[in-house]
Length: 243
Image 1 (cartoon, helix red, strand yellow):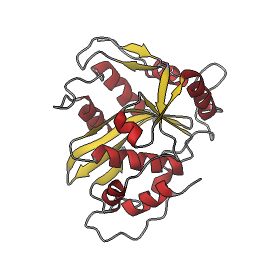
Image 2 (cartoon, rainbow, N blue to C red):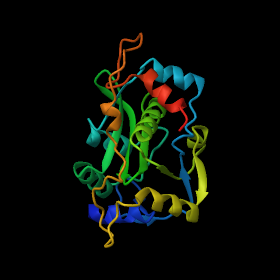
Image 3 (tube, rainbow, N blue to C red):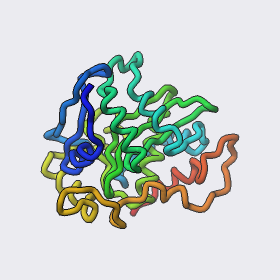
Image 4 (cartoon, helix red, strand yellow):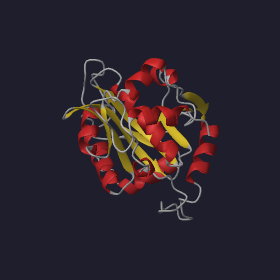
């Protein structure tokens, strides 16, 4: 199994390249730089009326970085609607290490103690690179994405990279741009976080993935489930606000 150096992975993302595998059991990875890139403008997330209700009711308990390894494993599992995935063991190990280094993050959706959906990705500078999302219950991945967008908005991020466009992502506001425009957005999002030698460094210019957790706790809605530190109705308000 090919070993991926986490620092090499960070350097690749910094220039718009990311790793994929042919399938879950592949021994190697290949590097991808799409000619067209899907991004989701952070102020352009589309919250349908039904999704607003689902979020505001706190149908799922939503957490961040409480079960990263379980989340990436769930994303890597085959399912009836997705028999093969591109996350092999090498990518999984590299991202677990990147999580421990503070770069990779997950948003998890729970029903009781059961992990039923969510997403994971990589934060670098003011960019977040969405890697994979999964639903084991209706709308779980949409709710996770909504919480992610709200978190990025509060944390000062400027770019949410979705890699490849899909009809599902397009319905939520994702747009497709060419490589040149993407690289310009990426350079702006990474300004001040990449040293002259290409080494990623901690900087006040980076987005704050955990800023949402420091918001004052709101009064809970009329619901049996409350997502700390803010509730679903607060997430809806954050998403519909304009910058």
